[in-house]
Length: 186
Image (cartoon, rainbow, N blue to C red; front, top):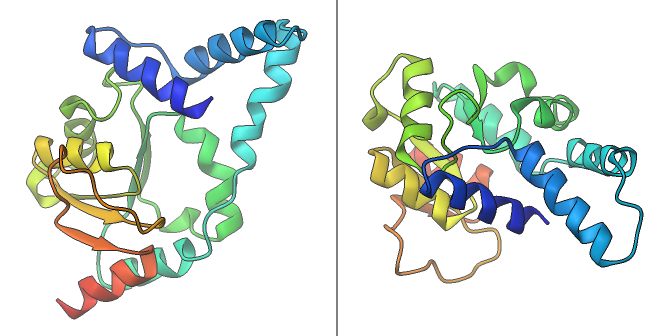
């Protein structure tokens, strides 16, 4: 469902339109429920969607973010979903207080990988986009950030080849802790 939500958000952005992650996700979930012959009422949809707020951070996230902060990096998140959806995950990981901003694409009205989303983050942080780096596990996100002028740091958690169709990352690491140590050594 997440992949289909991203697909539809990307499609709307490409068409010059916007809808929130929750709206697109709700529509897709309703369609999936109907296709399976299940109850697709608003109550059912509203009971399933909160599951996104119960995701857990990977074990390397907290030590990696702490190390990056020690190194003097400003830490900001930018999501295609609602920024509030990740609050519980970051709080449980003990890193919520390390994050200067938790941003989403609602205000710019363009989903990542559109350049407007990344430039919005730079505006909020009051810095130039070329002074920022995006850390992500999705090659499409790295590519979008690079095309917008940011550095792109790819977390290759699955150890798979990076797609040649996308701009290559500036750095690749298997996890956030390793990335922080690579940056500390440079």
